[in-house]
Amino acid sequence: MLKWAVLGSGSSGNAYYMSDGETSILLDQGFSLAELDRRLIRFGSSVDELDALFVTHLHPDHARGAGILARRCDIPIHLHTKAITHNAREFAALGIPSSQVADVEAGEVIRLGTMNIFCFSTSHDSPGSVGWYIDHPDQQVMLLTDLGKTTEEQKELAQKASVLFLEANYDEKMLEYGPYPRFLKKRIRSVEGHLSNDQAFSFVQESGFSGNELYFVHLSDINNDPRLLEEQAEGLVSTPFIVCEKNRWYGTIGAAQ
Ligand SMILES: [Zn+2]
Ligand SMILES: [Zn+2]
Image 1: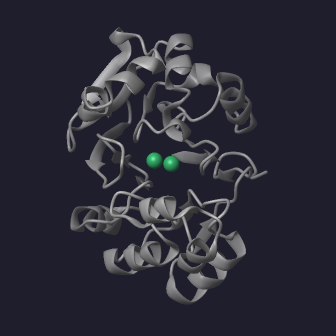
Image 2: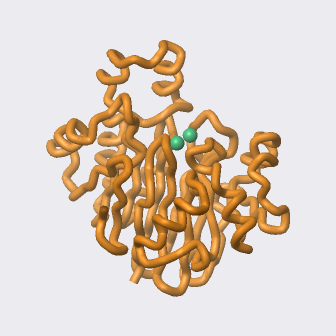
């Protein structure tokens, strides 16, 4: 049976764990090695059980721990080709041993144990940004964060997914009247920024997502409020959902903190 855990989501660090006992993967690694291991142990695993890492993009909250994990565990680190070629300096700074770098194109299927995994492009201000889709005999899992607008392709994938991790980064009013400088507000709202709560709800409705698990993730600390998001979603989202708060962990493995 496939199990999963949101080990962290948001600007302070992102990581998602998935395992069926035979194949175990991590999506994003925005933590120190000790912190990642602490979080994995809580869910009955450890860094030594990982078979591969899949990175959405090179912003530090998603990739800062990719190199330290690679140097400790001899596992492949999958990321989009452009994340390497168009971010040469940031990529080199991660220090991923070249023998472990596994670059892919969108749609290229990686067969790993019991899972077939591929990425799809996302609109975000980091070259080679992608979301990941995991096709497992039990569940189809989609990770969609860090994007300013959604696409038809993403809606078609979400329609087939049974588990969806979806960004709901900001409430439009909280961003508008909040403390961020104008240029940052503009960046967040842009097509290469982040998804607002309203955009996330529209995506759920328009995609026809009817899976059994919907997680709203990557909430802004400043421009969102988990209670508000929950209230807004009540009327607009018909599937059961979970709002993932900072510093709390969620999933089917172990108990949420
Ligand atoms: Zn992010
Ligand atoms: Zn980002």
